[in-house]
Image (tube, rainbow over all chains, first blue to last red):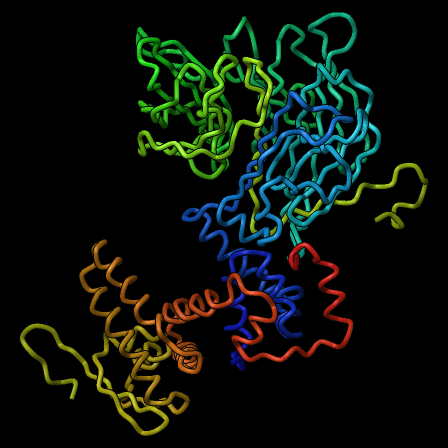
Length: 422
Length: 163
């Protein structure tokens, strides 16, 4: 083959669904190369096909499980596990996904890269107290941020959010703007907080005031969704009632913050049930809130409820309300929902661990609604200590068809005429 | 010919003549699945014999086979038919060798059979997916025409995709 007309070659290549393979195609011959990288028409057809398929198929995703008890810059690599979806394995290629120990972030070149947050296919990684990087682990691109203001590492909540700028999307990768947010305690007052946010266009850290000094924030529950960072708030002991949203792209401070009430019916199980863990996450581009209810008498089961935030009306919709039967050897009282599947609303992950138990059931499990008593073990529990609290954090990456390109930072030290800047 | 009407529906028959002289008699509803034929038929005073000098009889036959299946199944449109069509399409492209695929694709494109082009380009794309450069070149018998050094440069730029 292939003396096909240009239009037909375009149609064929535009249907090659993963970007890794498209790069391979670009090397086949000059004609394919120039079509893939230089043809406006080809780009248009690609986006057409990918938007068409979006509703049917899910994007490749990768879940990075990290035990954050060991989050220490000087310690050896923290216990970790990387889970690649089938499509993600194809996208990453054999060599990156086949090894059992996690080598995913080795390209950064230092011992213990500490993941702080994720959005789309990008990660916010910390190297030292004041040194942060934004990286795309698929394309192995990383950009070092200017030194961050010093914060007490024990009292910081990290946020990272990016926004794609559709005007600058090219076939070599969509270009974005992003924000890094450090929500930190300052001074001796426990509830006094300051916000430091970093803007990719300005290349600077900026300090601003936190408008809700009375709120307590659960730091491990921050998610980025639709250009906004959301935190679960801790009002009273173990009672989750509000979600706080911060839009760091919003210039007007008053408009940047919002508080969202939990859905009606939240916390209401049956009489014998006690409310368990709450978890927020993003599933197929929508904000979801999960809650599990366990029953003291029946440790072999629990109830799961999930609400989804509608985009158009600011309301919650109950989307799941299911009774889950556990497999033999698993107990609801030592089970915590730790993550939602970013592309499949029926799948969730939980940890199974207790300080007193040394049984074989310890581990991270995947469960799909509807498949009762069918819990797939993802990996062993990474935390070898006997602490009762589960401190596993999961950073989901959802890989868009075009890998996100991290823009170079503007140079701010040197004073140059603007036309000389990159 | 078209004046011969039956009590149920009037079915106009068209004669399609391929480049090698082979002719096919098909119902209008079948042939108009192809955009090019549809255009010709819609022109007023069109004849019932249509010559297609760019398509060989073998491939025209296959294209028409596809049209027939889809025209029949489209008449009563329920969801089950969609599944049948999909299954049939899958069978249709499953064992096509490259030469046939190539000529069929050219024919479908020439005759503006959009749905068939979709099906065939998807088939070719599926032959590319998951393959490396060398494998793609071998599959489609394409020779690299990059200058020495050019290929290495592109590889370097996108090294992650070649690991």
